[in-house]
Length: 331
Length: 284
Image 1 (cartoon, chains in turn yellow, red):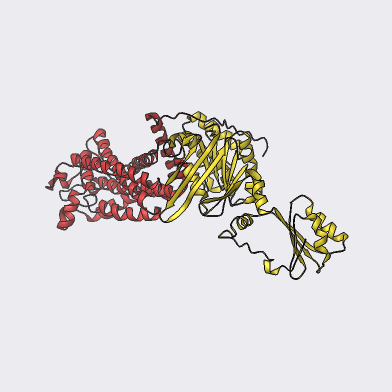
Image 2 (spheres, rainbow over the protein chains, first blue to last red; image 1 turned 180 degrees about the horizontal axis):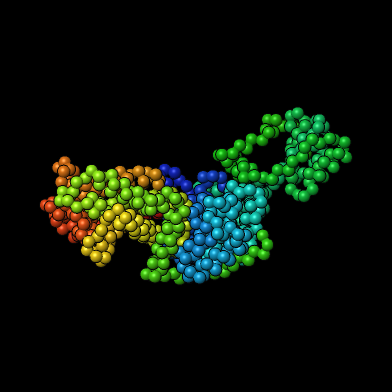
């Protein structure tokens, strides 16, 4: 069992008073793979992570991490996991190095080992220069890296990262992705929660989509994108042109919708490098002037809309082209 | 990232021993050290155990000392230092309430809870921090005392005994403060409630003035107040004037026994209670 499934949950349910935070969640993460748990704020992602990391007890259901029961064998679970929680769980008033040494000591490393491990991790996470500074002076990206390093002190085989890139700037985000990929390459099993479809797509082997405490879809990123319909092309013309939709059709992955004023065209596409350029070139050859070309990657909102028919609660998914607005569909 | 070599073994650890005595001591030491670093980095907390004791001691001895006439002669400074220790050490135990509340309201406790450590170390580490700050605070009060004319009369061992009575009491109080820190909503409210409880406890006692002229209700409270027992015990051990000797209440007749009894009773109540409350607050 341990070799096959490093994280396994059945029917996890958690209630806080009248609120159902988790409502019968099943999960299965094979050793050495990444599960992306995708959902909006309040979907139950953090609750699931808290139960799997022994911080909260489920009302119903059970879960095993590294082969051990999260309720009855919590000590063994703790020995085998590394956690990076959503709110920084490092000490603001200590230096980066002091934080890592403290965590090493509290994990049972000797003083010498804890120091050596702290220096190793600071080096690996490009924090060696900042290691002697108090955390108050760290940037968001540095703090997240330290938080992640803190979860790796004992080289745990299972890692939980709760929204590791929320609030990071794009550069820090890509850097974090790099680290996560290398972690998994080294053999760890990882559960990652995120609000970003592109992040789950980029990193995860399997994705579960959660909403209101339930798993509403699961599969590989490719499965999920098929359900959503991939990327979307939006073209704005200089002036209405009936030929445009027909000219575009060979480049798209489905029908081309034309807006009421005839200037805006929208179609599903397989995203690919150079798509925007081909669009401009094709239309140009047909003698049509283009104002703007955009390729939208599907967002979490699109996934939700496709799966549930309703938008995520805190997002506005209304497009500038509503269905009533569509005058004509080119087939 | 250049050549990132993340050394993860990906091997599942299959056995875990409950933390032995050495592990527990080491966990407590790690957390105590952490708390001391906090104090050193927070000027306000640091001044609580350094500048405040100096200021209080000097102010009280010179301001009150000018007005209070000791019942049987003797200088106010001789009388006041034990009281200053009582006042400073009782209120400094609040560090536990504030620190613990800070921890519980931030994310760090969650980190600790996912580590394979001895869980009560968080509480024991707090109380040990208070004990160490109490010792530092004692040094400042005693040092200032010596400068303003305080003299212990019975030698070094008795003097240390007098200090130890305070340390034990302060340690017991810090477990009470731990309970407060756990049940309070945040550090500010912990501090507020703590002051409301501890300040009257320190003042309505024999620490600053003899109890003889207090109104009857306050006087009985003061005579049975643990702070009075501890202060009287220390005065006896320092060989300083101790007017409470003349009070007929049992704790004032046997201050050393009474102060030890009080400390142990408080410890026996608050240490298990704090552990219980902490477990309850951090499980869910």
